[in-house]
Length: 239
Image (cartoon, rainbow, N blue to C red; front, side, top):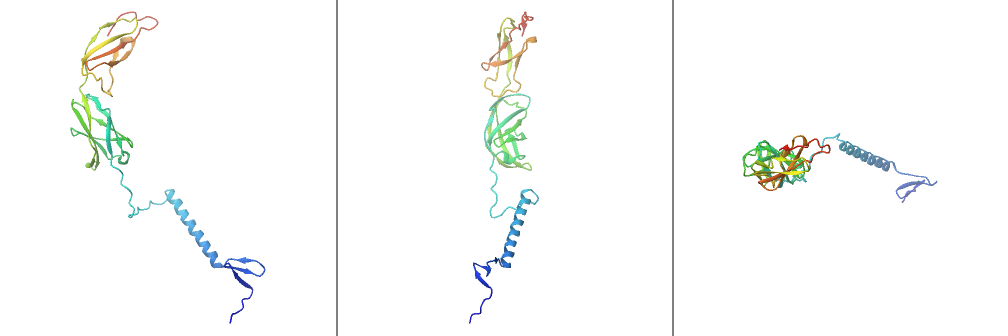
């Protein structure tokens, strides 16, 4: 025997009065309120983490982060330098340098070690000490932790040329009327050197100076500056 239901009827999980008004059961209201509260808490915790207010989450051991790629050494600039008693900065070119800042060391073939200065992802600088040897010098990049080598790249050979020796000039006197050339002879001129530390110049007294132009490894020339418009330097200049 079915019991009669007085006053209400069930329709789409809502209770509907005979006068047309409906309402959601109290259980559904509490469930919606709880879901909104949980969502707000999750959003708040995410905001705190993005703002740095929470310590970083530990890495998921099931998906460890990929290790950084080892540095790759491809070339150097310059490839040829002139022997000098001063130190010389050489730029090494390659890849993946910026992942190993403060751990890269430049190691020379003669045993010298200097810290590498990372410029960007593909370039580091090494300060070579006194380049007294006239032979090719090898350079490596090494990863070191507590002075212990971890990884070493392939070597790059840099040719070190003997210092230039300037022996004679011709002519010894140049006229101030118009421009002229003074020729210089000697040995070991850096005609093919890409980077010259403190490039040589020819000084012409009160008329200023001009750069040295290398023709071969034994010959170079300088342009004599022309006389000024006032003509005050109407004399021969001893070079």
